[in-house]
Image (cartoon, rainbow, N blue to C red; front, side, top):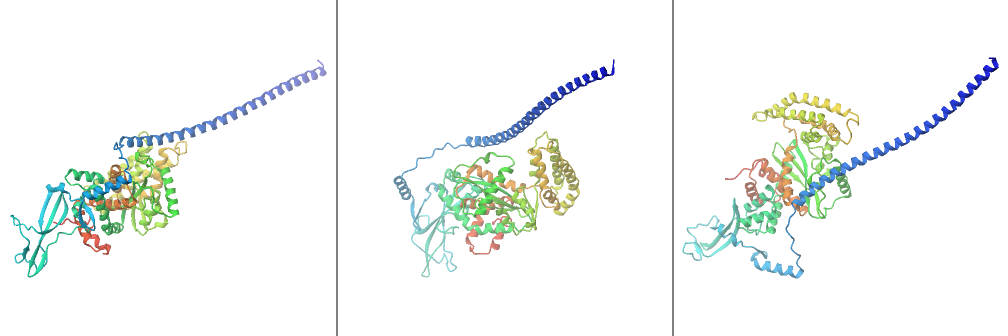
Length: 572
């Protein structure tokens, strides 16, 4: 084959290869277009999957919320009262009814008022003849004005009635004061004074109503019904009036309680709520209203777990918050009610001049005390609130269960000496400095490992993520627990007292007015302080109401200190 032929043959091969390359190039471009189309489809599918995941997460949240609401509603429906409201009478019928009620009551000289004489209580009636207590009066030398009956009792006397409660029944005491004449002078005895002017009720009767209402969480209606069954017919209006008047005279005692508790160098604080029936809120500044609204939104976002009572309040009612401040060392506590607000300004204003330790949960208002603005306050955490976050992660979560195990270990070590009567706060501090650091270091090591996990292993919306970051935010406050020997590991002192308010909330459902809520805060404060000191609240109020009623309302607050439950002693 000649060279020309070889060249031509090679040219043909080259041309053939070029044609093949062009085919391959076209096929490659087609493949690229197909790959790009597939990548576009994949990207769209990824977006769709992400959107579906978000929708599923949102749906799960909505389902959990709906389950919580349904659970609460089912309880409300189960406890729904079957009592039917009577038809509202017309104006003429109402006036006629008032006339009949007024005519049925016995008229007495109580500033034109009319009151019941309680004839149904005749089985528990005591008659006491009182003699004058004037220093110059001598019964053996005096002459009775008027005659006597066959038993030798005076037939002419001025009668005063008193209602006194003995444990088990209400007693009517008739004080009869005959008129005596001695050396040309007339003398007449006097019945014992009652706490309120023109009132028949002695302090024991008032104390009984207060004890049942705020110690045993009974409604006023239930108290009146119980007294009626015992043979004494007290109206709800009378009971409410007695409580209202009592709150007026105990105002200084309540203030003394607040001042005394704030002098302690270690406090426990918390808050709880009550339903307030009145729709009208007390006047507040725009800043306060804005803060309350912001706080409500924040509370909703940070809510640990919805409870059956967290369903929306009924129309015409609202949540009113009671703030609790307690002293473990004094065994005294008090509630604050300020228009029902949960604004942080309420508790921060209360503690603005406070110096010492404050134990609380991780609510944002309390964490404000960790800032430089409150340098004199050292906030310490509640281990039970931290532990609860990890318990919510479930039994199957090994990391959460390990944190729970270590917290329980702190409790076991703490309780080893709790039955030793000679064990002091200094002894306990030394023991804490021995057992706590190794356990805290182990908790911190595990916490740091969990904090370092990527989002894939610790999803931001998971229960474990919430618990881990809650513990991280509370770490400094948690360490503060072990810097003293007299602090508790948790805030259960407040939690146990809030149970009494919760019990009352379940029974009576609401306060009708803000004034009633403020009165309730005062009475809960004194009643629960009695419980903390092992004092019988009935005996306490029976004695203290009389003493306070006799004091000058302008007396210095310090004079009321000895009447607080931790100082009060029963008079024999």
